[in-house]
Length: 563
Ligand code: ADP
Ligand code: MG
Image 1 (tube, rainbow, N blue to C red):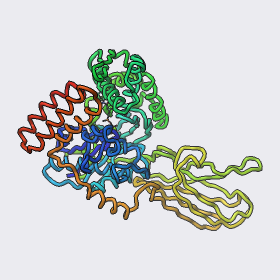
Image 2 (spheres, rainbow, N blue to C red; image 1 turned 120 degrees about the vertical axis):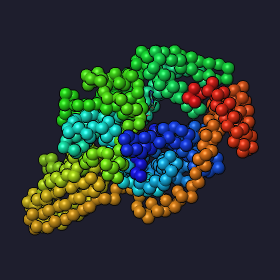
Image 3 (spheres, helix red, strand yellow; image 1 turned 30 degrees about the vertical axis):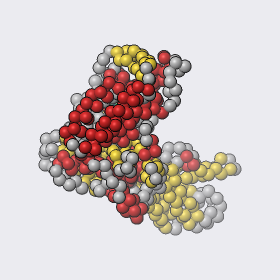
C-alpha cells in the first residue's frame, strides 16, 4: 500500500485510497491534522505533533517548527545537544505519520507519495525525497500540492479545463494555475507569498487587542509566554468569528482580566491589509499563465485559512463567482496525494493521468554587457524562463567579447534577478575557443531541463565543431549519499516516545505550558493537578489514569479554550 502524505508547513496529514475514496488516517491522539512540530521530551525521547507544539514555547531549545521553510538549504536547527537539518526534522514527522498509517492499516508501509509546493526547487524536492528515505519510506513520487487538490476534486476526469488553486495555510500563500488537456495536467504558473498565512492574521489581531487595551495596562506582552497566549487567543477568536457575529478576546493574568469584544466587521477592518496582499500573487499567476478570469472553469480553495468567510468573500469578489469548497480545505492535498498514490499503484478504479510540471524559476547564464568602451560582467541571460513546462530545451547564442579571447566561462545560475550576484549559482564550465577577433566566435548554449530536476547545459562551438557538456544534478544544499546513510543511522537511534502514552504526555505537556503561563493561585492549582496526574501515572493503573485524565481535561477547558 502506498500512502499519500501532505507534509505541510503548519500541519501534516496522511491518507490512503480505499477503492472509492481517500481516507485521512488519524494520529495516535485521534486527530486528522498533526502539527508539523517535532521535539525531544525531558528524557530525550522524540515527540511529534501536538505534544511537541505544546512544548514549543515552554521548551524552545528542544522543539522545532516551520522547518519546511528550510528544506533544501544547509540550515541546521539545534534540538538539545544535536543539530538537525530540515530533512531530518521532516523525517521525524514522516516517521510518525508512517506509524499512524501502519497502525490503522495493520500492515507495514514502505512507500509514499508526498506533496510539495509547486514552486519547490530541485534542491527542495530532493530534500523532501531524502526526508522520506530517512523515515524509511520510498518516495514513489512527489506530487505538486495544487495538482493534488485538483485530483481530490476529481478534475482529472474532465476532458479539458483551466483552474486556479488558491491555497492559504498557516504561514504561506500559494496560487497556482493548472490546465488539464488531453489527460495531461499542466501547472501553468505558480505565485505566492511565503510569509502570509493564518498566523499573520493572528498577529494583527493581537496587535489590535494590545492597542485597544493599551500597553501600559497590560502585563509585558513581549514576554514569550504572554505573547504565545495572546496568539492562541487570537486564533481562537479568528476561528470563532467564522461562525459567530461577535467573539470575546480575553487575557487572564492572576486575578485580572482584560477583555475586548470583536465583531466580524472589526476583524474585517483589522485584517484588511493582509487581504489586500492576496491580490498581487493572483494577478501575477494569471499574467504568467496568460489566462483571463473568464477562462477559468474552477477555483479551488485549499488550506485551513480559506475557512474564513472573509477570505472566501474576497475570492468570490475577485473572480466574480463562488469558489469550490465542497471538500475540507485542510484535507484536500492529503486526499489528492492518496489518489496519486493509487494511480501510482495502478489501481483500477481511477483513470490514470500524466502529470507534467513546470520549471518554477528561470535558469540562465552569466554574460557581460558592452556599454560604450566598458564591459560590465555579472549580467544574467535567461535561457529557460520561469514557469516553462518541462521537459524543455532552449538555446541561446552568445559571442566572444575580446580580440584573441581563448576561452569562455559558462556560469549557470537560477533566479529572477538581472544581476547574477542575486541569483543562485549552480555550476560552471570552461569552454576553450580558437582566438579570433571579438564577436567572431559564436557559441550555442543549450539548456535542457527535465522532470527529475536534471539540468543539462550543452555548448556547441560551430567554428571548430566542438561540443561541451555540463550536467547539474547535485544541488547546493542537498545531502550526499554517504551523508544520508550516516544521518539515517543517527536518526534510528533516536527513541520514539511510546505511542500508547501519547495522550498522557500531551496532557502533561499542556499542564506544563499552562503552569508556565499562569501565576499565583491558578498556577498552584495547575501544579496540584500535574502532581496528581504524575502520581496516577506512577500507579500504572490504566483505569485510574483514564479517570484522572478526563477530570483534568474538563477542568483545563476553563483555562485553555484551545482544548
Ligand atoms: P499548512 O498548509 O500551512 O500546513 P493548513 O492548511 O493546515 O496549513 O492551515 C493552517 C491554518 O489554518 C492555521 O493558521 C489555522 O488558524 C487556519 N484555520 C484552520 N481552521 C480554521 C478556521 N475554522 N477558521 C479560520 N482559520 C482556520
Ligand atoms: Mg498546505
